[in-house]
Picture (tube, rainbow, N blue to C red):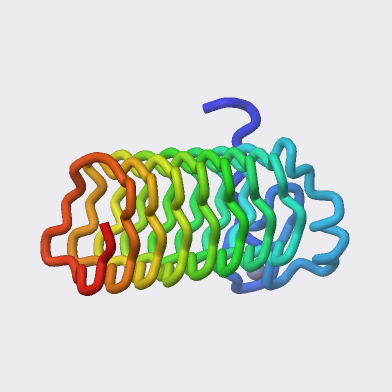
Length: 200
Ligand SMILES: [Zn+2]
């Protein structure tokens, strides 16, 4: 492990079981100056930062470097993460409703149970990402690379996968009702998926 490694220190609040945010002594729920913490956050170098539960909704996070960062349960609704580096980032349970992730690199990111509704992943690299149980009605994956991504049990009703690369993408038991796959390439696994009204 590198020296940049976040110390997974416990929150200083008595009895709190959460970890402290990187650079703080408390978790997001107990931090005393959340605005100051967000203002001081160096998004260009947040590699491996522990930021679980943080509220960055609506923020300009273009080109941020969150490689291997812990953003589990974070509120990123409406945030602009276009071009961000999110490889192996933990976004499980995060709120990405309406977020912009065009051209973002999400290779091997963990998005299980995240809210991806109306989010835009155009041209994003989503290879090998874990999307199990994600809720993404109307999400856009136009020209995205979903090689070996795992959206099993995900809700992608009316989502758009036009011109996406879906080789080995595992849509097992996913709800794809009304989704569009026009011009997509590759052999995906649609085992027990709901493909009612899918356009190809
Ligand atoms: Zn706490």
